[in-house]
Amino acid sequence: MPFTKMQGIGNDYIYVDCTETDYFPAGTASDFSNRYSDRHFGIGSDGLILIRTSESADFRMEMYNADGTPGKMCGNGIRCLARYVRERCGMNRDEISVETPAGIRKILVGRDSAGMFFAKVNMGKPSFHLRDIPVIREADTMINEPMHAVGTLYNVTAVSMGNPHAVLFTRDVERLEIDRIGKFFERHRMFPEGVNTEFAEIMDRKTIRMRVWERGSGETMACGTGACATVAAAVVNELSDRTVTVRLNGGDLRIVWDPKTDEIEMTGPAEFVFDGEVEYEA
Image 1 (cartoon, one colour):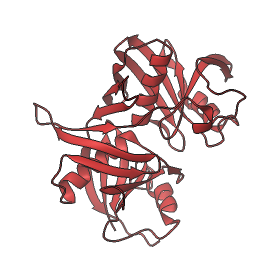
Image 2: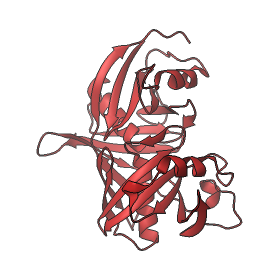
Image 3: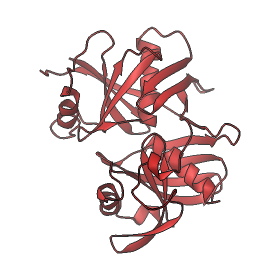
Image 4: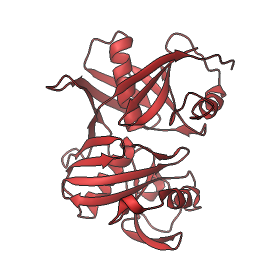
């Protein structure tokens, strides 16, 4: 079975083109992602993304985390998918629509003045309603709310970008043991579907340093939806402007939250790593 490894600022996925051949009968993609995302005994990745046909968009994205659990949306992953279909599936347009479980996303692809590929994704509107995230709590929202985790008090803002996020603002993000804190939030009964946890440090009103613990994958180099959720949380807490550079372990993303449309745009790179073949029987 052919596959392609791609990465967006270090957030890497295994891509399989299923537009002509369905390599994964129902239920088998989860097992593949769990086995082959392993960085010692597999291909190594943050998960698996299948490229499928769609009746409502140009293509459909089917995503799985490294532990095999399904995901609804991945900002870095969808940028890479856009580059893949633009360069390898005969797309002759710079605007591409992709169906995801979180809705249809539109991506504009191009190259900057230095010739580097970029993709700008309309990530949709953030939601702070707890029923959308979801969060089990007797309130409508969770904005800058105190919560104890592994012996420390954090102020938490919960956001949905099509997937659940808990954003924690801190003064020294580099020193945090986010594996302990991230696991605590991911498994907390307040988040019935788990949660991605963002640890953010405000550098200035236009720059945020962020690390992320992704549900099902652990700490990753980057998270596009997490960067969007962090900027949304920073704005509602009056900590940043609406146009922000988010600095992640793997690189930078430009995030813009439009006050007129309430939609967030994310711009960043997408790169091919290598192509390969793997023997796999579903």
